[in-house]
Length: 388
Image 1: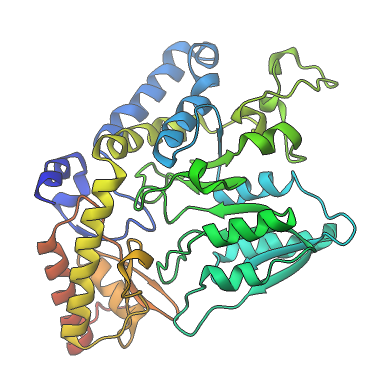
Image 2: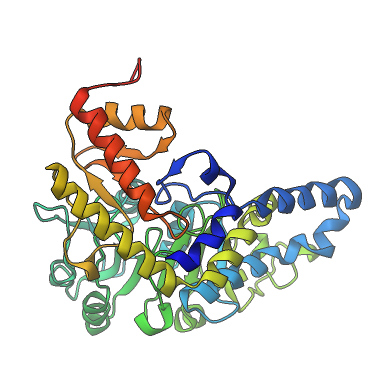
C-alpha cells in the first residue's frame, strides 16, 4: 500500500477530507480539470470542426481505455450516458420467442435495473426475481437454479451494491449456455476494484460505468458486446452514431458498424469523455491487481474494527466474496452518515445495511482507523450535526 501513496496528490479532495465513498463517486483526478478545460478550448476555438478533429472518435477512444481494464478486445466497448441505458441497449437485442421468454434477475440488483426489467413485461417477457439470503447475498448457484429452457436472458450484478458481495458469474454463464440464454453481467461495482476479464468469463454483455471505482465522473457508462453477439444480433435501441456513414443522413442506411460503435445511438456527451480519460489512465497505470490487494487490506482492517467496536456488518467475511465496501450497521445510521459527511468524513447510507465505507487505492489504513473512530464516537455519543 505504501507504494500507492504517491497517487494521493493526484486527487485534490484527499487533502481536506477522509473520502470513502468511491462506490458512489470516485475522487476526481487533478488532471480532470485540465482535460475539461481542453474540451472548452476546443469548443471555443474550433467550434463544429472539433467533431471531425476529435470528438466523433472519442467514444471509441474512451471505450478502448475501458476495454483494456476489463479484458475486452479493442473496439468492443460502446459508451452510453448511464448504466440503465447500456442495459436497455443490450436488452433491445433480444425478444421473447415462443416458450423462451423468461428474464432472470436478482432482488439485490440496483433498483434502476429492476425497474427496467419489470418494464420488459410490456413486450412479452416474464420476470423471475431470485431472492437474497438473510445476509443479502445471492450465491451464483441460486441464480443458476432459476435458469431453465424457458429462459431468454439472465441479468445479474457482479458485485451487489448493498452488501458488496461478489457473485461468481461462472456457474450462471455455464447454465445459461446449456439452455441457450444470454447473460448480461453488471459490473458497475466491480470494474476498477476487482480484476475483471470479460473474455475469460465469456459473458454476452458486460455493463458498467466510470462514475465510481474508475474515477471518471457521471455520463460515462459502457457496454461490452461479445463478438459472437455482435455477429448475430442488432439493437432496436439504436441511432445515427451506429451507422458506417452517419453524416450521409440516409434514412435507409442499414450499414451498421461492425465494432462497438454499432451499439451506439444518438449524439454522445463529449464533456463526459474528457472527464473520464484521466481516471482511466490512472487506473491502468496503477493496475487493478494492485488495487485489489490494497482494497483487501483496507476492508480487512474495517471488519476488524467493526468487531472491535461491537457493530454488525453484512459484508462477507470470505475475502474472495467481498469487493470494496464494508457497510456498518449502527443505530440511527442515516443521521450518523449525514453527520460524518458534514464533518468531512465522506460516506453514504443505504437502508437495511447502514453506513457504507468504500476505501480505494488512494486511501490509507490511518484513514480507516480515523473513520471508524469518528463513526463510533458519533454513534455512541449521539453527537449529530443539527438537522441530521
